Image (tube, rainbow, N blue to C red; front, side, top):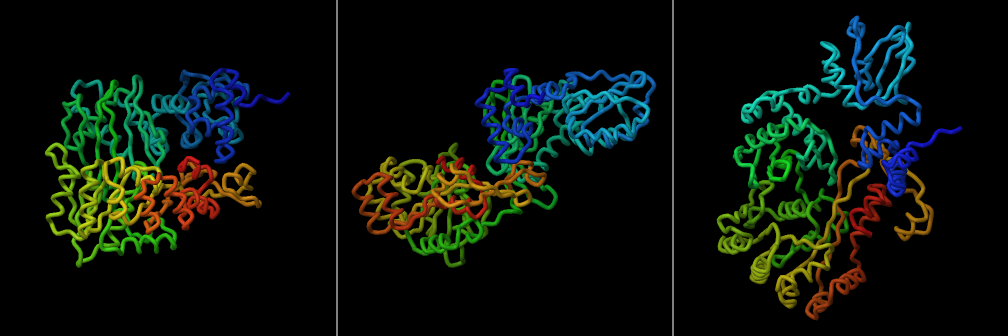
Length: 555
């Protein structure tokens, strides 16, 4: 009689629906992850629920709590690095039987364990990783603790009782808390995370990293460390630790290894405590060369031609986090020379560009994009960059600047290039002014790239070929997941673009108040590649996956 599959057991136990199971199976197929890894990655079930199902499948005992019993001190004689490495711990000895808790029973090196305990029968039970590490930290001294610290470096921080003190300031400056915060930041830098999220909930504190645009849960320190961690970050950002009712913003500048890291800190009060988001800006790794930000050669030539015009507006569109600011900085770097005066108004100034005058908006003192742009025009600029056109007043000033001989670069929040026209009209800009002032709209998205270390090919299915509008048999690619990419299958991101330069025909359409679909259709007929078409080329070349393209473009 064949064993039931884990998925079937979870559905039977009510931990998973059939629809959720099918989604997990697809994720497993697409990524090459093991079923359990796919479950936990999606957050479909808890580790305990998964292990209970596994114990039922393998007919092993699952223990929620391990009671340590070693009256003769037998276990303390053991060299323990082996057990820490494989996430297991001997926790009881009775007559000729040793009880061994394992987290991953199928990976447990049973033959090696029998060599270590030649005179004993091994009885395996399943336990969570957290429970195994608890037994280790509470019951073993010396070598096993150093092994644990090396393989699970946060255990010593999690076991501290520092919050028994009522002095939060004192706790925030305590060595274990400093160590925890510093390690959280340094690990985020090492994993190339763009943001760190510290999120308090009723019974837990969760820390997540945003890597390549996707949030992943990294750790969950004890809830009792919450106030000390938050206070520590506030101290580093020079914020008011006594204020927990209002949002606060700050900045931290640190060095991680040889990397200069600028951190924007946002503190936001919630029902269960203050929520913190840290935006990591790695000054050392930034390359704002327009040649290296993702344009294919044909598009790069087109963009450089657009930027060669002495006046007009170039608008980069896309949702938050699509890389618009990086593209603008690349354009400014390309245009920067001693012969031109470049001024910007930004919110905030994320990176300092040599030879460029950069202003940060400050709404509290009424320094907005509109007022900042109005002031910039009195500074004899040749090129102006406005971080974002958010309202009609800013849009109107930008148009007037373009019509009076300035080159203006800015961003809009729209789904595609053609929608930039309707967005400006919605802001109150007359179509004839848009037609006269705008040189081009450029829409963009960021696609995660397949990890080169675990990249593998597979035959495209009929459904895949239908999406790509291809009839012949082709190979597509995905990442199985490895240590280099955190078992995600992706490593790094690349931009895809939709470039819409305005010519006479398109300008006439704008004047006649044609809608975005008409403008887009006309541009496509003239050779414009849509975001999906641009991304499809990246899929076929093996740079990214079809799933990633569909996720990003929504098609």
